[in-house]
Amino acid sequence: MNKLTLVLGGTRSGKSAYAESLFEGQETPVYLATGSAGDGEMAERIARHRERRGDHWRTVEEPIGLAASLLRESKPGQPILVDCLTLWLGNLMGGDRNVPQSCDALLRVLQGLNAPVVLVSNEVGWGIVPDNALARQFRDYAGELHQRIAAIADSVVLVAAGLPLILK
Image 1 (cartoon, rainbow, N blue to C red):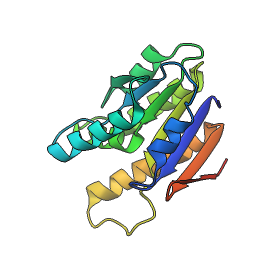
Image 2 (cartoon, rainbow, N blue to C red):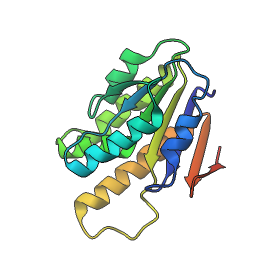
Image 3 (tube, rainbow, N blue to C red):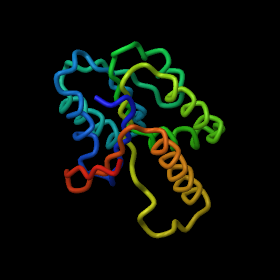
Image 4 (spheres, rainbow, N blue to C red):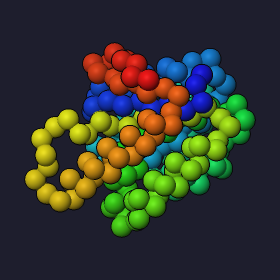
C-alpha cells in the first residue's frame, strides 16, 4: 500500500468503493468520515456507506478538524481512509472557517505521517462555471487542494463508471 493516495471522481463514480478496496486484507483500518447527517438523504447515504464497508472498519467522524484527527489516529502501519475532502471543504466553508489555513495544516500533517493514507474527493471542476461566487470559491478551493495533494502523493487515481484510471 502506498503511503499517500488520492482518489478522485465524480458523484456516484465508484471512488469510495475503489478506495475501500485498497484496504482489503488490512486489519481494522480507520475510516475517517467527514460527512455529517444534516438531513434524511445524507443520513441514508452514510448508512449505505457503513453497510457496504462492514464491521471490520473503525469509523471516526470528523467534519472539521481533519488534520488533528489524522495526527491523533495515525500510528505506524495503521491505514487510514479519509472520505471525503470535498465534504470537509464544504463543512469548513459552512462553518465560516479559514479554508486556506486548514488546507495548509492538512498538507503539513500529510507530509509527516508514518501511516498509509487514502484520500477520497469529488472532482468538481469539469462542469459549467457556477453562477454564484460561493460555488465558484468552493470549486476553486477543491481544485487547488487536489493539485497540492497530487503533487505530494505517491499515487493519484481517477475513478469513472467504477473504473480506476491511474494518473500517477
